[in-house]
Length: 82
Image (cartoon, rainbow, N blue to C red; front, side, top):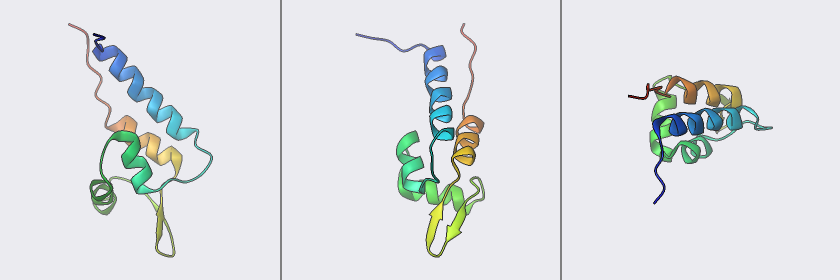
């Protein structure tokens, strides 16, 4: 059985932010939710509460990849190994 250390988890989270930042186009709330393991409704709640800055094109909501990466980094908790 493979175990994941806290450092490895933090590194994977940082990699996620970097991958989001490198996306070539704006992403949808459900796409960001899928990347972080949250549902569509929860993501729209974060948007509604002003935690995530977004763009609106008609009825479509899009999130800049840099904003998605910022949000992920803001919610990343770094823990020191004991």
